[in-house]
Every structure is written in structure tokens, then in C-alpha cells.
Length: 284
Ligand code: AMP
Image: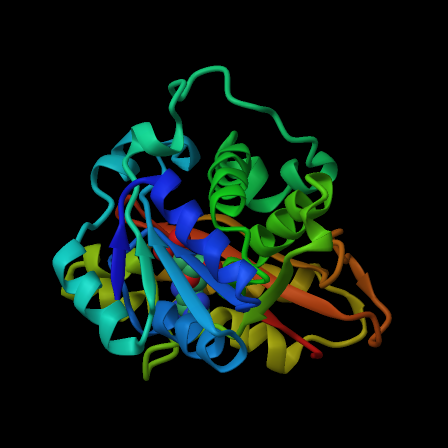
């Protein structure tokens, strides 16, 4: 695996690969890797000649400065994990490399409705930050295939929209990979490492509540079942931002379900200042 720190050097090497007609797959991450991240590499390896990964903890997408400060960093272990999984190229830029003109007055992206709901509503500015870093990374790497995890359901939709807004959709195909879970159902996440042992056990309640919705939701009003799921979280001491059932393609809230519309249940909740999110598509 070759490690690049400078965008220019990476761009040049990838340009040569493109001239050689190599198909390039890209899996961006913020590091503190787990098997969920590696599953993106696995998928990319099957469909591309060259797999590029990146690790960059993007300051502009953290609406909470404490969360940014405490974001886990395990860079040496991460390098070994990516190498072992077969990533060919790892991009490790600095903040200065990604934002050469600083992090103020960055471009604004017209995300519309998507930015006003769920994660967008509870983390103001978060998706602008996601777009700022992803736009820059995509321009440097110009992959044929981009690999994202369903774990961040709304983020996948935002990045798809970004790819369209920037005209990169002619070049880049966005691939969404399934959420990898721990044995007890907890969605794998870098933030899970910050949970103390007691909270780690309680944390499974998020996936349990979503599974409860998936297994029990029926045609008609959905408020009763989302309230029940929220009560499960409250009982374990979570501070919940949202538990919602939404249209799986638009993320419009579904208050009355006709039993056929494709829907997804999504939740975000804090356990002692650690914010966890998860989702389950009800009728894939
Ligand atoms: P992050 O490092 O959290 O920014 O995540 C980098 C990429 O890995 C994103 O596309 C995530 O959606 C994806 N990802 C994170 N957790 C999981 C998981 N448990 N299963 C599959 N993909 C994941």
C-alpha cells in the first residue's frame, strides 16, 4: 500500500492509472477503523483495479467541538488494517491540504429539504461540512466507484446529491454497502470505542428498538410504534434526538403507512454525550 499525504502527488499517480484505463474505487473514512470500514474495501476490491482509501477527520463536519476533540485516532493500527485488507493507496491529508484557504467561508451546497431533517436538523452545518470534504476528495481522486456505508443513511443521500450537483455523476457511481453489526446487533462505529462497559451493553438498545419497529410496524398510523421505540431508549437512559419512520427514497416522514411504500426507521440518541445513530430499511 502506498501512502500519499499530498493531493498533487496522488492526483498525478491516479491520472497515470486512468490513462492506463484502470478502474478506481474509493472508500473515504475518518479512521479508527473497524470491520464496517473494511467491508467497503472488500466490496471495492471486487469491482476495481485500484482501491483508494482515505483517513481524514474533517473538522468542518463537527457541529460539536468536543466531539471533534474526542474523536478516536488510531492511525498506526488503521494503516495496518487497510494494508491487510488490500487497499492499494491510502490518502492521509492534513487540514491544510484539504482546505488550503482555511476553513472559513467555504462553499455552500444547496441541499434543500435533506439538510433540514433528522441529522441535518440536529447537527446544523454537519452536511455542509460533509459536502466540503467530499467534494475536495472526489476532485482529487476522481474515482469510478465510491463506496459508502448504509449506516449513515442520510449521508449517503447527501453525497449522492453532491455528486449530482457538481456534475460528477457522469464519472462517479455511488455504491451503498450494508451496515456491519456487532454480534449483539450494535452497528459498528468508531464512536463505540468511547462507550464505557455499562453503556456498551445499553447501546444495543438502539438496534433493538429499530428491529422492534421493523418487526411490528403495521399499515396505518406510525406514531404509536415510534413512541414505543423511543420509550425503550428512554428507559435505558438515552437522550434521544429522533426515532422516525421515513420514505426510504426521500426521507419524508411517513405518518400513515399504506403497507407498501418503501420505508426506513432511523434513530439518533446520546448515551453520556456519545451520539449514536442507526437505521433499518423495513421492507427492502
Ligand atoms: P466514518 O469513518 O464513520 O466517517 O465512516 C466512513 C465510511 O464507513 C462511511 O461511508 C460510513 O457509512 C461507513 N461505515 C461506518 N460504519 C459502518 C458500518 N457499521 N457498516 C458499514 N459501513 C460503515
